[in-house]
Length: 486
Image (tube, one colour):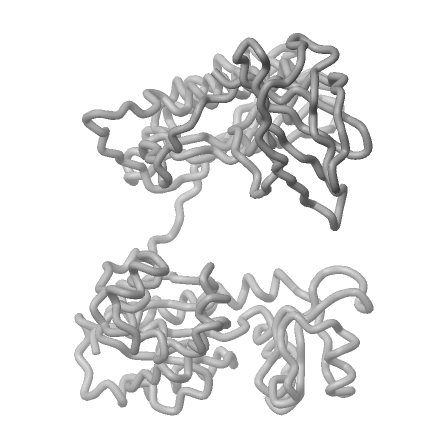
């Protein structure tokens, strides 16, 4: 076994129990923020799970199952202190490790000299007694197998991983979880027993990768933990300034210093945090998220300039504080026959300027809603991945293009009711008038009956002059011209 995983289960709750010296047999739960009557349980200890109490329960439901349940409010100071102690403990074991989650550490054991793996596990458990925190250890030949072994409930032997102990629904938040449940797959062992090729064809690469992890065929590199450096700087003006020009002049020089420090540590800026202090004692903090990590001081300065152009200071500025949030730099390979966005940051800066003019909710990426209602789109504020070319999943349908009228034009139509539907006979008003030569329909559509229900019947018609139109009838007596076929 080359890798080990140390999992401090429910660290936020365990740190409070260890601080207060609560006995291990005392059922306890950690509450969400808010009123106790309306809050829910976000973590429970082993003693509470014996009463079938699970995270997500309402407080009243948990107390109904165990009247002696100890309810604790979150204490972020104690949790932060416990995380620092666990980090120092893991750092004393091995030089290289990965902080996989706030509660899980992956260790590289290849450089350690040990008598046996079982002895190392026992020594580690003994050394962690001073933490007074529940610790689960898992070993594996790959990092992911070691991680899975540490997540197994009631894992008696950390040297053997039992896939049957890992429930798919609780351990892996998969998008295809309902499909797997319909197939009768409850554990990771059930998933590992399926053929990989068929699993990839039906449910995609994500399930195929999980299949490889279960069989030990997926071996990744550890993302070694290094203490994060802070990239911030503060400047105080001799005299308070009333406009942003002196601020930008000083920020240009300070951003160059911060970018040089980022470049030295092989990092890039993903976010700018600007704090302004005014001479009346007030302060303002703003987070400016970049569309792409960058090391360019000019790009960062342009982002600050765009923000300060529309910012109205309540008083002269005494000092400002700049902080760059680091991340790994991104490298993308450009496509030969497709063209991506040349400068995503400049594009994002243009969008920010436009949003100041037309409004924050009027700019976005149009996408079609999951509904049968025609011509319904919404704007998504999500930043797209401009490096990956868009490839249509569904081939285009070869039919006559429809030039839609937005919004649809209300018209008067002479119609005759036959059965449930009104059949159009002639167009009386609108840009196209005259008797109808041929009709095709009706095509009834409806939806959203649980909210604001809509209902219409579409018709494709041909006039005497061979013009092809699309009409829509909405009960009780509304006709609209939806568009004209080219």
